[in-house]
Amino acid sequence: MLVLWVAVATSAQKDPLASWNEGTSKKAIIDFVERTTKAGSSDFIPLDERIATFDNDGTLWSEQPMYFQFLFMLDQVKAAEPSHPEWKDNAVFKALAAKDQKALAEIGEKPLLEFLAVANSGMSVADYDSSVRVWLATARHPRFNRPYTDLVYKPMQDLLSYLRANGFKTFIVSGGSIEFMRPWVQQVYGIPPEQVVGTISDVKFELQNGAPVLIREPKINFVDDGPGKPVGIYRSIGRRPVAAFGNSDGDQQMLEFTAAGPGKRLMLIVHHTDADREYAYDRTSSIGKLDKALDEALAKRWIVVDMKKDWRVIYPFEK
Amino acid sequence: MLVLWVAVATSAQKDPLASWNEGTSKKAIIDFVERTTKAGSSDFIPLDERIATFDNDGTLWSEQPMYFQFLFMLDQVKAAEPSHPEWKDNAVFKALAAKDQKALAEIGEKPLLEFLAVANSGMSVADYDSSVRVWLATARHPRFNRPYTDLVYKPMQDLLSYLRANGFKTFIVSGGSIEFMRPWVQQVYGIPPEQVVGTISDVKFELQNGAPVLIREPKINFVDDGPGKPVGIYRSIGRRPVAAFGNSDGDQQMLEFTAAGPGKRLMLIVHHTDADREYAYDRTSSIGKLDKALDEALAKRWIVVDMKKDWRVIYPFEK
Image (cartoon, rainbow over all chains, first blue to last red; front, side, top):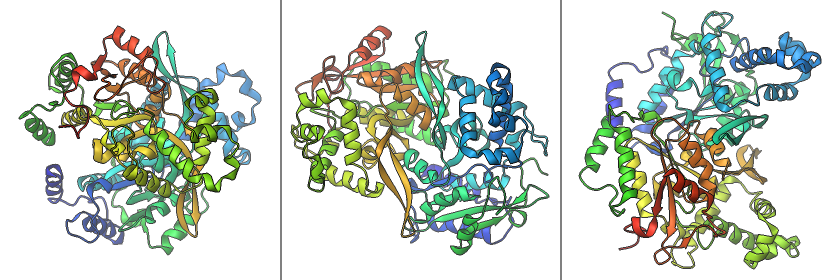
């Protein structure tokens, strides 16, 4: 209680959502937090139940021209090519190496994910973690020419801090894999590794010369996307969120699951409307398609953030 | 930092491990906590990395004459019998209903778990949660004639509080299922549902008349026991514990995985040596067998708690 009081007292001194323009989105967020955290309010939510879940790709950081994890896996596959001569005639590999979006679309998601799972397996979890860190430190985004971890949304960072200052426990619930997020999300979002829910590959415990290691297996155990998100929440969190944040049809079920709980709830969709400062896409995009979830958000009056209008800044590096 | 200081200052006023007798076990625990939390100590562990994992059955509460979850599942199966005439000639069901330990041993663990998974599936996660709560409120332990949740270890409750007061984040990592633990562990151990790692059944997201529900499927997705425990830690926590607590060979790999980290680590085994106040069993027990892990604990000088000697009280209800 003491810590909360201190945090709230500090944040009251300035606007905790200064990166948001004034408008209905910002107002609805603040209204929700004030109603649910004020003692005696009919919408009060006990501290323990203040669970807030955030999609990552397209909700907390950018996802264009392609999911950043996909670009990482692609680079991993290309680096591994010399030791895999058998890939030479593999249709999936050829389409990947050529970044042939049409061929990839024809191949479909499942063979692609299976290929990537095999290509990214066999090493220890620690070695894989290192390869993620090296890639994030060296790779640059093709448009912004910056490390991918620079391309996080300042308004969402501020929102995460604001929620935590009001006693909410913040989780990531992403279709991305846990290994790709855990090395950097604490520093960038203030979310510790144990609050990251994501897609999971099988790993196996082994003793190598008496030392315990976890080895990645060539199989995806669980896909934390779409209807998988409420399942991931069930498996890793064990209670229903009171607030959920997404940007695509892959988040629809998480928001529905959140909305179905009793009492005051917050459901928010980030709508990518700013081609100048970021990207503009929705119903027909192959990455981060927002179609059915947009209809549901509008029909049910969930908050739909208009990035262009609602966000004073997009990225932390902007002046 | 403020909260830590307050907690430490408060706990310093009295012995936080008063339920433990003076001796090498208690001394080793306090020594570990003081060395790893004192600023400037060469063994200092940053706050974020103070992850402590606890087995549940036999480590935090009793597990005799049979794992309590097993008794629950058995009662569920018996209650469901009238609607399952096909079970009449099922060897697993007959052995279960008769509590025929010899027949069950011959059948083996896998067919048993599969039968229980099928028998405990088909309902929503919310209905299953209710059935766990009803059972825990009404069932009584055959020897102590008390609710099973009374049979938790006071010294371990105190240890959990002591660790948390010193900035450790406490997790359960159990072979038991997440659904069986989450309804009561917060009240009894102060561990929230999202810090419970356990065995996981498949569940499926469905819309029923527009309402989202999670339905239990007749399949175990992941067994969080033995070599599964480091895997469960990897999946749900994402970093290596600095302290781990167990009581059986099923905890051996979790303790090995913890010990393999750099820096000061705490590995502790609860040895059941008190037939009068609780139970005495180890190398030959079919429940909570402690054999290889005991040898390793002795060889590597992990803490081996002698319940009879080290614990002033066992259960909270004792005078």
